[in-house]
Image (cartoon, rainbow, N blue to C red):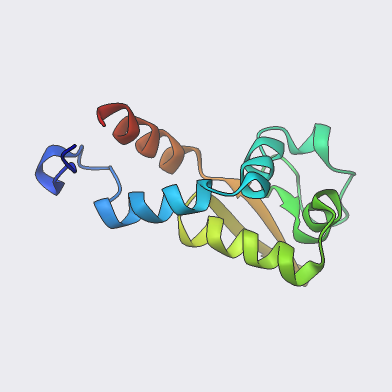
Amino acid sequence: MSTPTRASLPPSAPSVEQVQSVLKALASERRLMILDWLKDPVQHFPPQEHGDPVLDGACNLFIGEKLGVSQPAASRHLKVLVDAGLVIATKRQGWTYYRRNEERLAAVRQIVEQI
């Protein structure tokens, strides 16, 4: 199996190293659940005081509660997703909200289809 080279990737596509980071992020069932919930944060999370669930995403506190893990564990999962570029973190009034990065997810999907 050959690895795509930078020259064979679309200009907006992540690098091979970034794809490896994404695949590592997707290797966790909990992180996959987070990505699924963030498709429709209004359906999966309670109303939020400071962030708009559609524009900003879901509050880190709500994500941790839904996962059933400690806040530090939830933060680690979210950091992996942010580092892989799969979610975008937005700070509002002392809270951090997370939403899917649809552009990055589409680029990664395109690369995976080439493999």
